[in-house]
Length: 374
Image (cartoon, rainbow, N blue to C red; front, side, top):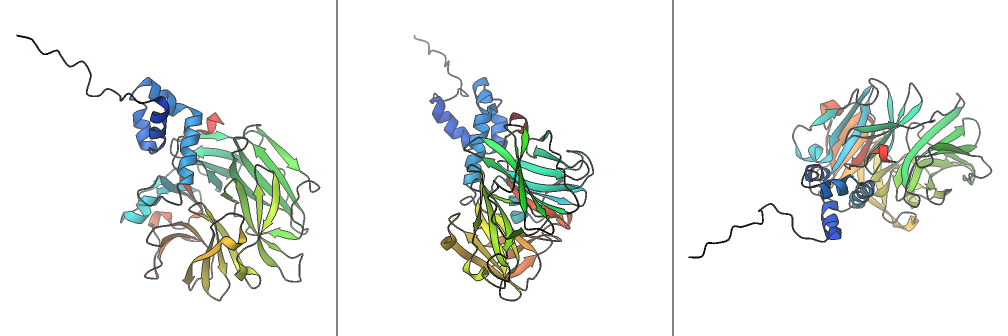
């Protein structure tokens, strides 16, 4: 009688897939799964740990902002006095008690942090007491202080910051716009993580549009499609100021002026820019106490501005951070975060007691990108 041969292939054996196909599969997984799968085998651990893989993974998540509606790998980072807090976007929308994480002491302890911007999972902070910048990934708890980041500024200079990624040079950059309070003169200073230095652009080669004054001193530039964008006013064309947008193309190293929606030619006030699912958004108060939210569907094309919604009864600062398929908008007010249901016209405020009094709120994507690999 012939005996059956023992089964030699383990139930847990890895499928025999080409390496490039396996990489494509792993790239589509969330960070939580990738952390676990590092323990599967040495080849997976090596691949998932590569800086090129983590960058590809981050870029795919950033590109999926416009289409992701399920439990998404996005969080909100915000500051409240000397407190640094974060929360999952999914938790804010779907849980009766949002799970808010406090990060006090994870960077430098109790201090005032200005959130300069987020990109590919990295959060850039300007720290008040030592006038320095830090890059931090709140998902993997890794930080890095940028060398030589002190800026020499005086009381007569207003500084606006921005943070983004230059894909053409694989370089993360911080842009500081220094504007004299009593002059229409703007100077740019740019920090490169690849070169690890600041460079100053004089007024002669900045190509900064003339007659333009940046708005919202404490508001940082909005990163969209390799550009940084600031709200501004232009008084060079007429006696009255016109709301406009200053855009810095990181790969071309040039500034240009973008026009807002046609409604903003006259009488618009408290113009606010934001990133709404990967599109440049603008909040205008053009018709009394209504906040009109516009989005630029094709970046750089003025004709692509489309009014997304109008929120009645608002005259204070508001910035949309996220919007669901059911048109429920996550809004940042000066006093905290709130949800606004476009269908019912009702607010849920505050969206969480522990997020009241927040400021500089930014949506970030959860990635494995480490600032130490830059």
